[in-house]
Amino acid sequence: MSEEIKEIKITDIFSYKYIVPIYQRKYSWTEKEIEQLLEDIIYNNSNNSNNSNNSNNKYFLGTLTVDKKDDGRYEVIDGQQRLTTLSLIMIYLNKHIENLNINIDNMLSFEARQIYDNALNALKNMKENEEIGAYDNAKEIYEGYRCIESYFKSNTSNQQTFLVNIKKTFLVRVQVPENTDLNHYFEIMNTRGEQLELHHIAKAKFLEAINDSNDKRTASIIWDACSQMNRYVQMSFKPEIRKKLFEEDLSDFKEDVLHWDTLKSIFNTTVDNEDIKTLKDIIDGHFDKQVNENKDKNNTDEKPERFESIIIFPYFLLHLNAVMQDSRDEDSLYDDKKLLINLAEHHENKESAKKFISNMLKCRFLFDKYIVKRDYQDDDNNLKLSLLKYKDGSKPYLVNTYGKEEDESTQEPLKILQSLLRITYTSPRTMKWITALLKHLFDGKDAGLESVINVLENHCIEKIKKFYGCATKEFTEEDFNKQTGFNIERIVFTYLDYLLYRDGYEGIIEPKFNNWKVQFRNSIEHFYPQNPENKDDWGDDILHCFGNLALITVSGNSKFSNYYPDGKVKNFNEIIQQSPKLKIMASYIKNGEIWTQDIAKKHEKEMFEILAKEINGKNSNI
Image (cartoon, rainbow, N blue to C red):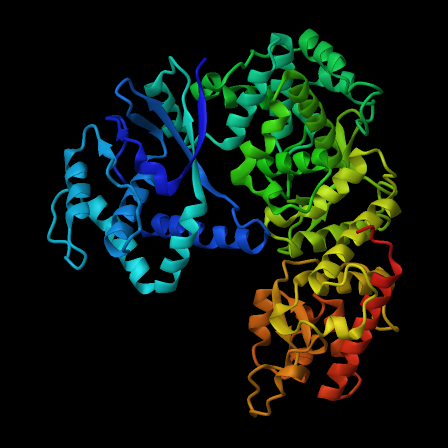
């Protein structure tokens, strides 16, 4: 089977000739989709650069699925909307930027829409300041160009950033295998409303590395089970397989079951799943057929789904890779656009591929057992995550991972800590705490409650030390004062709130108090307002100091508005409850005091002392 997966700079994309076949629909992207593509290149690429010491850091825009014709042209099977938009962008840039040197000679052509070809050529040949005339045909093309023109003219600074970032932006071009029924593939993708995703390609690469049909079947079944992130992995297998893989209560694997020969024996003597072999099988539609059949047949004894994983499957694969690499610091390891690159070494041969698949099952089980999930049985609007596992009775049901079944108080601190990490690192690319915990568990280290909490506490401390640049020495108040206001990273606020929750504070906060609703707090609130009505402004050094700040929800920040501290405490007690630090600040008002600059600095000193004591007293193993 011939197959090619090639990284191509988008500045070089039109060094090749592409044709959009007759069965493709019209160009349909509107301003929304066009601006999203522009900003993906501008902002995501910039974020990668800011978060990496590698000046050659790549950003992957997505996949382009093609079929190479005998005349050397590439027929576009999937990705024509993105490719057409890139054509319009390159035409605009080539017209307005001198010495850009982007090759647009091989402009995209359309097999059945000559009017589109004419429109692209007309735009290409327009002079720099020439206006687009009236048009009756190819309206979609001209409107798309106008969106690009309008965006860049109203965002000149973004244009400069775009010009820098396109040099580091790539597409992954996927050549479909020989003898693929292209019409069938296109029909499937349109019917499902799906695209071929990188993790589908990754699965094909792993299966191709494994030459034995029974090994392939084993790998395929495990991959599909692990990919269903919104259910416990035990329940993605048929009952007879479950009994062979897991202990009777489903709380752990049976001894030695994760050895590959044992897995192959289990799956090939009890399962009649079809054999998925290649990328062609996936393109032809088998990749979701098996998953859906498993989901329908395997779970007749399961209650309706009630959970949502905090990450999707591609990011789980990236965390697994980071665990196996014994690394979690390199940002590129968590870039979903680099999934194929990051996983490539794991399917270099059949043994490495089988090892990765076996580790996937192990790591997915650990993820389910020790990483929080969102529980949809919660009726309120606050974030509630449950740390539970399946046990087997007459039917599977849920119990706490730690502590007695009817009492969640034992594991509540861990649930709170993970919830705070979840709301602090909202992007899956920054959830490195998941890798830290999975690595600890994967290596067979102590899985007790205190040990697991300690891993996550140390991770928080690592992040704070890295932020303040004090990884190798004790913290002082001077170190904390290096950053103020909106520059302070959210982890400083959330970890302090966790410490106040864990240890309590001078009769104001009870240790491990009940019913703390951890919400998505990402707004830094100034307790004394930035724009007071009486214009009695504090100086910036006091106004933006840590002692005058707390982390709350965006809606809470909006309600607080420019109220003075006494008004906030009097009218918005439910917002005060969002943050233990804010509760301490509010206690001064409740005790009849006025929130002054001196009190703000006093509060700051006390909070810094709590953080410094924790950080300096921990062995964070950096």
